[in-house]
Image (cartoon, rainbow, N blue to C red):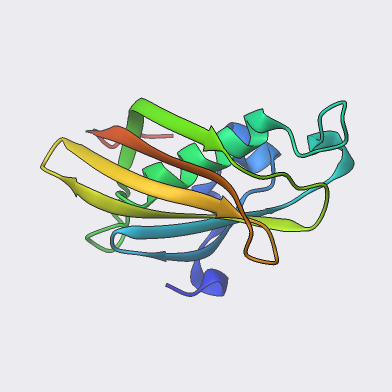
Length: 137
């Protein structure tokens, strides 16, 4: 699904506050982006590790939740996630790309990475997620 066709209503709460946006979303793949702003930096002037972990977690979760049926949302919660920081960024736009790697009806696994605008890898990680029932807002 192209980024301009993906509704911002998918991001609520904390992810909306951080201004995450879809770059791409299709079955078994999610790519999310965020533009680094001054309030997202740590005291060393680098993008905060908490932001990186949150962006990766969101992408990993969304890659298993592409709606199989029109109008029916899928949701998941994180059971476990590993995050390895391998690079740094101070500015620009960063992208988390995640792919569903396996699973079944209730649990799925995903792997992903975050890169900067030049394609340098900042973070790698993987997670295990559990689908949850659709809940009204």
